[in-house]
Length: 153
Image 1 (cartoon, rainbow, N blue to C red):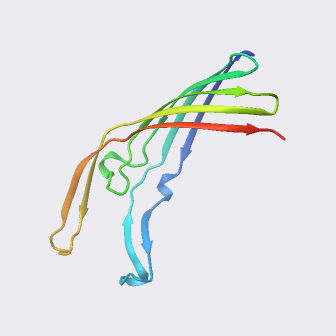
Image 2: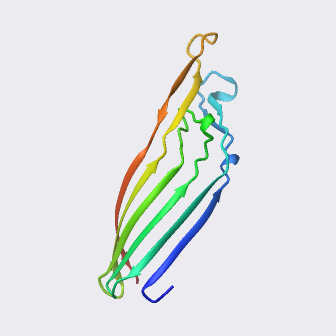
Image 3: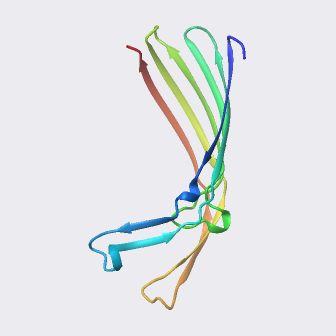
């Protein structure tokens, strides 16, 4: 935008619907083909939207902020124990310190706010005629921090 400010953005599509099932196979399983677990997943394609900005404070320092929104690949009515995903907001900030022309250090932090979602799944126990259902709520928040050293040679 100007020599001191830059604007960043992205839009990303992920083909989650190509992931059809979760399957575990082992020679120790007694089911046909050695399948221990086979579970169909009903994922939907999802989008991620992000916008951010960089401020070139001076030749030594750069400061960054950004926000992103991740759509869940799991439809709310299909959230399960194996994939209890939900929509998420990412809030991030960071800085770069240029030690000299060939070396710099990046610092970054992000807070991820996962929206609450319900989880419901039928589970079969040892008696196939008596399945029971797990029902609960899922909410996941996280804080990430990072430090990185860069060197151009």
